[in-house]
Length: 497
Image (cartoon, rainbow, N blue to C red; front, side, top):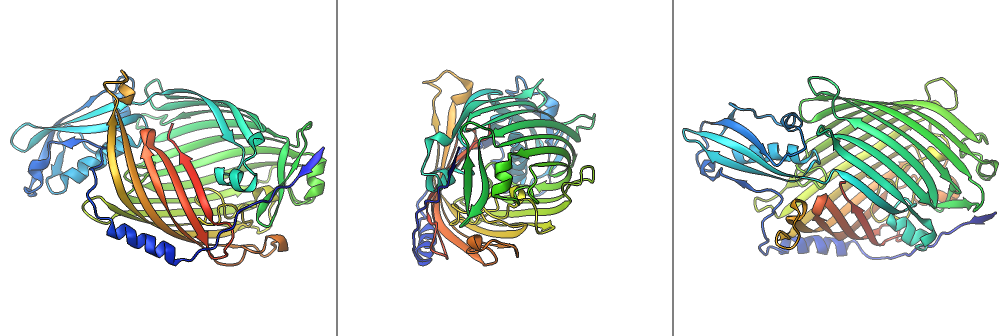
């Protein structure tokens, strides 16, 4: 049995004027770039000048949906056979309709062909290539919060790698249902099973999903010091076991408004050693927690492309009650919100600006350590403080980002690989500069973690994003912060499978 603490990091001290200069460089970079190839929309040029009156849609056709049921596509569309569409802004309108189909994540590409039928009448053909829907993906991943946590705080320890199988059968029965089986081994063990139905009613408005998961850990982050996890490791004995089960009901109104009600149960256990090292891990030196939870979430999503938005907006609000009075272990109330706005700030589709605000409020302020999460997770991250986690129930972040599309093209493999899935691979390269700020409040913070709590945080930097096949996004960022600690080069990767 042994205890392991690793708190190594790199520190970099630079000045904010470097970022200001970099953003200025974006403005100066006005060289022509290749047009984006994510969408081919042809046949509407004639209406760019003639903006008076309406165009009648004679017929809508779907080409390439060999497995996907047509009603799964039509439920995303506002237009129907016989619809009248104003000539003014018709290109933007049809593009928006296409984006709604693409955002189902059922298709690698969705193009639109418009055929003039005379007398201001058109046919609309959606030409799509279906994704691979069966993903028996061998799983190799890091057990840490992020790649940067592993690289900077854990000395790139290869012993923290997890392996297994991440199996997804998407679009089952051609109705956008998903079966998910996850098996993780190595640093920790986890088994997850889930199934989701996009609708269970004739109006296709109500969704249902189930998920259950079991996890075992021999290494547990039992407390935080200097805003970094401190771990206890026992190679021969499991230190923590947890089981969760969830049922989620969704209701969809229109195309952009979603309501979700989630019911969950959690049973969490730790060994006596963890409770002795940190009596606040479950509070009061307990070794187990049992509780039901209920969470309501409202989402309004009008982003152009959900995996990497450049235009539109996103709103989400969540209200969660942890502990429903059955066991009495917990009695918490949490509020969460997230608002984001994205702009295309010039007609040449070159410059993009985004702004976002996310936050949380929790009651009471003192909760078990394993639920004390303020900053350093998901969108609740101030770039420049990537190496750190900040405890608390009350926090907020404010983000600004300016992006320049430096390069956009697509690679054709049609003559090399005989597969419908790899005929065209889009590649977009965007250069960016950003400034983030944040604040976390916790009156009971331990002095060893007080450096970043109850004080304004400011991070800034520049980076480059690569967006490609299956909406894969690869990000390299170089960040700084006002405290002069933890800045450096950071890496992020995401993919929609």
